[in-house]
Length: 68
Image 1 (cartoon, rainbow, N blue to C red):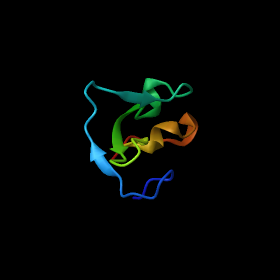
Image 2: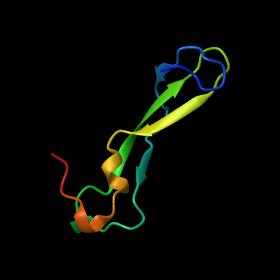
Image 3: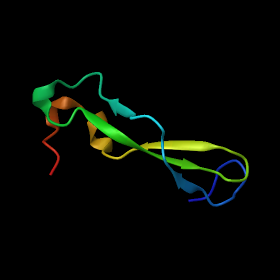
């Protein structure tokens, strides 16, 4: 993936603390409610992008099944 700011190839980075994102509308019984985060950084300009490893946590809880 290329940096949206300068076009340099971004590299996978390691976050120094545990970081998760979660749904504010889903309940525990709706299935997966949180996700670890992948981090990518640009070695040229320092731009950082974060991505949920399991983006389905953001779906409406009424139609989400457990992660398989």
